[in-house]
Length: 430
Image 1: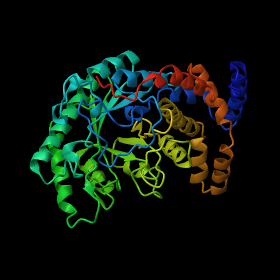
Image 2: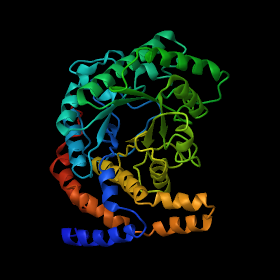
Image 3: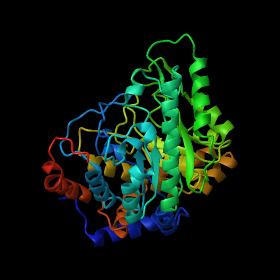
Image 4: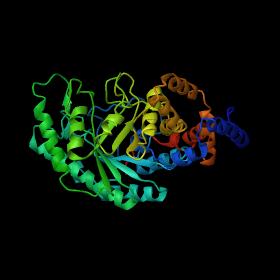
């Protein structure tokens, strides 16, 4: 590829960049050491368009839609793990895997209320070999018992209890994952419940949802093994007028029940940003979960790009010293491009945003602000936009043993030719 760089040129550019940042009081070496410790939880569902491996799995439903038919998607757990491993070799640092309940390895048809740790032992063994942690999600969608758009808030007690049992089972799986891997598993609860048109009763479903969640969380689990999170949403496909689990509902629930609040970048009004919410919610909650995504006019879960809002999220995390209190996960699914490339692009962009935030002289900016020198604050913020971030990023990739710049793309294209294009379109889930 014509834009490839030699190691020597990367190192030379880095030395010059390091001097530039040092002039602002930033120790680049310390920044890179710190960045290396930040894990991003990479979501499994980009690899197969949220199909999962249930033997009797059906079409997507519950407010989820994936577009595109790029060839080579994973058809079973082994292929998905192969694609994930390839992605990890192209991303600097050591990261995590975020797994949904529909991705268990089922030898016989197993309904959601019957899933157990044994169905995820293959994933646990693999994660141990990779030396990574894992996070988990119950799957409240694409199931006959979710066909009318309601699960934990369903008016039918039998259906409600089915999903309660699924939630309880998912927490048990999360606990076992955390124990086995020696790292707390964040088990995140998102439900699609809501109405397409205006409801007459907004309260009753929310009362049922709260009661269902209380039953799911009834058994205490050590936070050393499992952390519970609840995820809010503004609207979805089929729930355009009313979502039971709104932001206000889950903010109150998380605060009163001492759970993590999950903020998804695509789950709010298009003009509403989650970067501005972080300092507010973290005044009252010890930890939160992020699902970093990219909505285009709606919760479309596009691949994360290096956008102003992504950078704003990273700035807020770093400026307020939230790295130990914010669990960063990704959530997007695009079937129109190579799925390994999607993971690599999105995860590397999240890391680039964190790197830029860490290279900022935060104390100096706050000093200007506290002295009411807003002119200097603005001037420095603008000057930082043209600092040589790219040179530092390329060097970080080099010393991490992964391709710099766009050199990774050749590897993905070769992988597509050698592996992904040889997969048939026929599902092979076992």
